[in-house]
Every structure is written in structure tokens, then in C-alpha cells.
Length: 379
Image (cartoon, rainbow, N blue to C red; front, side, top):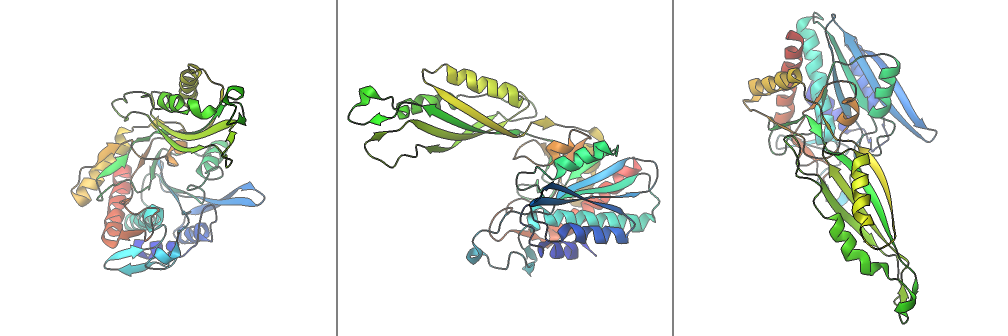
């Protein structure tokens, strides 16, 4: 099967996170046909089971090169706004439409095709191991996906030497950008505490809304200036809620929700300490709860960088920028066990209505991946 055929089939699975709908088993079936040993790993609670796949094919004694990806997708949204059925790949004007085509079923199809072509061409005569880590839980909480597979790999003493994650890293055109790190993400819930009372007797109450501007000002103070590999950390307030529908009632509390994307000048612990310190300087009671989605990481490998950059340039003539921008990805888990780099399709339409990918890009990405595999095993 070529990359387009695999991608088309993958799009047909309604694998809205964390449901798999058969996509993982489909990939395992293809890989088994070419000699891969496949292990379906199921993690989760009784009513929330997630399927994951670890597949590998061992050639010689060289490095284990892993491709990591996810088959789960975000919901399609308003179906009336789609030009096509989001779960039936449609090709129009050399563009493939469908949920997940861009993020990231197209990249999975490209890498599977590239790996199969490489195996065929070298007739199994290669020095190393080709492996796949595919999860069905990346777009949601990601509690039972790559995070758990990494733990399973450690427990079973399976070593991955290099990993490429197929996220859509390119903002505008293929070959533009790869990722060598990611910012951390911390979700925060702040409760400003006052004293409830009647609006006619403000002296007997403490309106927490009065303190809101000073809290917002304190939160929006710069966190840092960034560094040579990361942009400055950034805090965004996303919700302010009083929950009060009564016009003559001074509320007891105000709730703020905010997210911080932070660089490696901080850990989540030191960042929380800074936020608490700033807020404690204000003369008002509050409580702060945080949930960390991921710590920042910068994981630079000269071999990964050089092999990928050379492969991109050889196929496309582009020289990619190495970046740490954007959101979180499963690379945050993989970076704990091996060098990792991210490179995939153009991300313009990911998560959008009418998500799509250029067929030309799928073919070119397949060629880049094929060259990348060859280059890794030849050095």
C-alpha cells in the first residue's frame, strides 16, 4: 500500500479521541505483513480503555529508530460546515479532505509507506531496528497513550535510540520547520475570595470583584525574557466567572482560569512558586490550583538534526528552521527516554472544519521519511 492509500483508509476510521475504531489494528495488520512484530497495548480504566501499538522489525545490531504518532483525532465539529464527510476521505483538486488527514494520519501513512519501501529495497539488509509507537490517546488527556507506552518500554527494557514524531510542524510549506523541543503547559484555577452580602450594605461585605483588576495586572506581569532556544513564557487568562445571576447580591468569590506556556527557565514547581509569590503580595485571600500537562524540554541530537535536515534538503531543496514553538505533543514523554525530533505535514488546517492535506505533500513527505531512514542507518 502506498502512503495515499494508507492515509485514505486511516481517515475512514472514526477515531475521535480516545476511541480507536480499528485504526490501530489496521496498522498492525499492514506491518505484520512485512515482518514486524506487533504488540497491542491496552491501558486505562474499565470504561476508558485505550489501544496503543508498539511494532518493530530488527535488522542488524544498529540503533532502534522509532516513529511515534497518534491515530486519534479531535471531533469534526459542525458537520454542516464540512464540504465532505469528515470520515470518508475525499480527493478534490489534488487535495485530500478528512478529519485527521493533516493531524496526523497523513504522516503515519507516509512513514509506514516509507519504511516498507526501505525494507523492500534493502531486502532486510540494514543495521538496526525500525519501530513504531502509535497511540489512540494524544488529542485528549493523554493519560493512557504514549506516556504509558514509555513506561511499558522501560519496564520491558526495550531501548529506543532515536525517535521522530510526525506532528504537522510546518506553518506554511513542507520543509519549513522541525521541532527540537516544546514549552511546558500549566492550567491554573484561581479563586479570589471575598464575603457575600447585600449590595445595599457593602460595608458588611467584601466584594472580590474589586480586587480583580489588581490580580489580573499581577498575573500579566512578564515571566521572563526567553532564552536562545525558547521564546518568553506566556500567560493567558481564558475565563473569568462570578456565577452570580442576582443583581442585589455581592458575590463570595471570583474564579479565573488561565494557562501558562513556559520555557525551560522554569519547572512547573518553580513557576507555581513565582505565581503564588506575586499573588500573595496583594491584600486579598485567594486559592490557586494547578494542573501540569507537560514540562518544557529541549532535546537536541546532532545526528537526528543533521539526518533530518539533510533529508529534507535533498528531497525538497528546503532548509528547515529548528523550533520550540507551538503547543505540547507526545514528544514530551519520549524525550525522557531518547533523543527526539518532530517533523510532519503543513499544519494550516489541523483541527479545523474541512481539514485537508495536499497529495503532493503526502508524496514528498514519504520521500523525505524514506531518505531519513536511509540516512540514519548509513551513518
